[in-house]
Length: 367
Image (cartoon, rainbow, N blue to C red; front, side, top):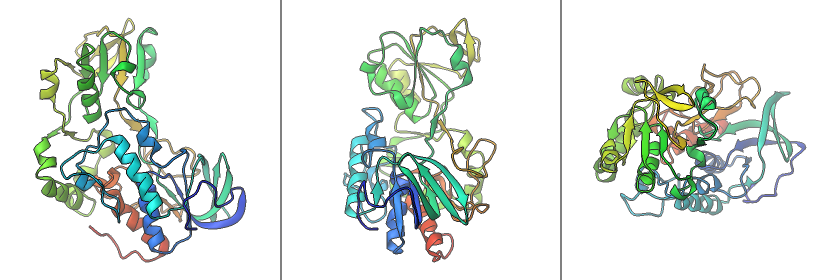
């Protein structure tokens, strides 16, 4: 299969394909690139109408957290100036061109709803039918399901609530005071964007801040450290990996100093509600009109039958391979091998490893 098409391979087919890749984002496309290098038979299934639509549908002003020189997938440099931070639409266009350039076989509108073992192969179910595959690579990324605390249900029904995944721009937020919950990079940038038009609060303990000059001008050393040092092959990398999915990534670009300068009121984390209003752990109720949950995402892999997972639902793998289900792989998971496993510029390393396992030509860990 070498054509990039929304048609192509027939679903509801008992004729097996060697490998099905689920997801045509950066992880799935990088995997496709390396499978093609190994001359493997494969098909990429994606629920969206176009490659890059997941990026197109994010908030208007979103920019990547890493500079352009570290935003390339294997075999194709990102077309932007060094030190610039590409916007979400530029990223979407890059991914679409990447799939087109390498003629990757993407079937669109195929939302995968189930994967289960069947006679030594995997039955991949989707709204378009099913297909048998010897191997399956799950490349849907870590942003499966918005994480919203249970006490959100106790907020006053008159408070407008939305997750960061639903936020588009300040005009889409009703008038009145706004509370952004979550002090990671996304939460801080949303709060800064809202500050000129809304009285804005932000709740949560900010993570460590990486100053812009480090990523913009000293990016080579910074990337060398997070890509080649902070991985599961080094003692410091293994230490960072412990509990990585439970704490936020460092603040990049935006800082708490900018929040103060913009007049955003910083609050401690929320612990619940009082009389329908958000309640901080210091016991203060915050009367607001809108709450934006910039609280990240949680895994949702219940559609993969028999998948071994940790207590939080993240798949248990050995560098992407699910040992209990031979032939099932993941690419693009947080700290799958290193800190950059979930980043555009780092996912290619894991994709190369998994494609090598599928082709039977992997030589072991590579930095």
